[in-house]
Image (cartoon, rainbow, N blue to C red; front, side, top):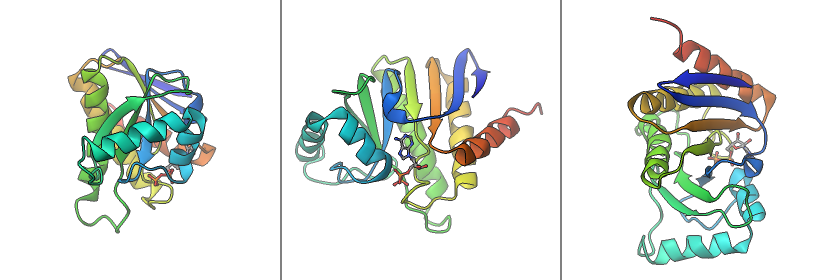
Length: 186
Ligand code: ADP
């Protein structure tokens, strides 16, 4: 585990299962359909129970008028059977060798999720490593974007606790390195 204070907020890196985090919200690396999938998305839907899928379908038909949730955007649902009260669903970019503004889209996932959490009055949130599973974003590059964006958002606002929950020790090491490099004194 590594913890870093950023402007009075705590940024924590740990290995573990995001569905077991007792933070106000956990973030889902969803796909635009919001209808569930594999990886962390599947794990979150299994742990939250079928009411989560019902609420996601409602968001698709009502708020999104049948459209897909765009890459980089985020929406909030309840957490149902999860220990977390809320789930923030965001859609990471699919890796295309860094083309099409992928860095910016990945940064938007982190920034928009934090915005929703702050607007909803939440003070703790857990993120997975967005886009680095099926979506193929290289972990080193994704970690740099994730850490840089989280530190910059936390420097500008009061959130509370932000966790990044890594599913493997290897991913953890990569995020830890990114955080150490990000916080090196100038
Ligand atoms: P994406 O489609 O955005 O790439 P994935 O779910 O395929 O999303 O993978 C994102 C990351 O989430 C991967 O590093 C994967 O190992 C990790 N992951 C899968 N299940 C869990 C879980 N239960 N808790 C935390 N991270 C998980």
